[in-house]
Image (cartoon, rainbow, N blue to C red; front, side, top):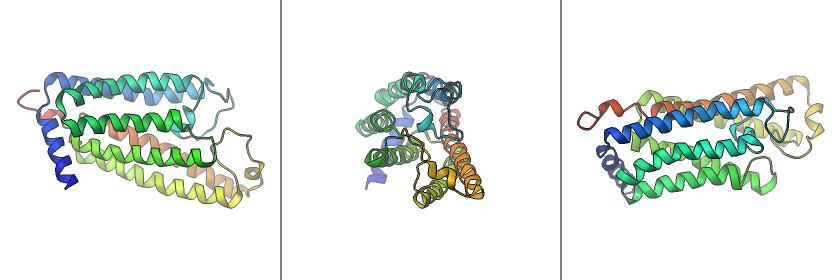
Amino acid sequence: MLPAILSNSANLFFNRFTKKDARCIRDAQRILLSNVFLNLILYYQGCVVDGNNTKFPATISYTIRGGLPLYTNLLVWTAGWRQMMRVWFSKGDQMARTFAVQMYLVGFSTVYLFPVGQGGWRDQVHGALAGLYFIYHGVMFKYLRTTTPFQIGFYVSFITFLVKLRQIRKLEDLYDFRTETNQNKNTTKRKMPVQIQNRLWWHELTLMLTENAMFISFLLGMTSSLKQLRRNY
């Protein structure tokens, strides 16, 4: 029943689109895309809690967990979501509006209430919320009618991300360390065989690339169906 309700909500939303709404989505797309690259630039310029002792490769959550990127991400990311909310609240039904607010709050909680690197149950909550946030993008595909190539790019990246994350977690458990932590770095990693360290580095690089690929695929696909709007756009 839920898929049918969701489908009806998504169809109602998209069929109400106007030229003004399409501009808001395009503006949101530009803002959120710029945020992806801004976070990386600020992090690797040393504008973080680590100073110049930055980590590469690193996940998005790790690069924005503190320092200037933490605040610029909040401002820019929220600015992008503001454009999205303008459309969702003007054209969406109650289900659409509730979903949009919930997705924003999940993303906010992931980064700001449970930032990565705290250790213990906090990192577990972070991981669960991050996973839920990624899944919500699949619902967004329905509302924006994202075309197949961009969905494929997202899901292939998502699956590869999960595989690499699982491989990293196995090495962390085996050698008793964490790749992303705010605490003093465990010396166990240095005791790993060189070939294992190299393998870990490639796992982390793939993780970083696929995570960014997920978001870029989603963001580029946000406007992929706007050309179908014949009557109002």
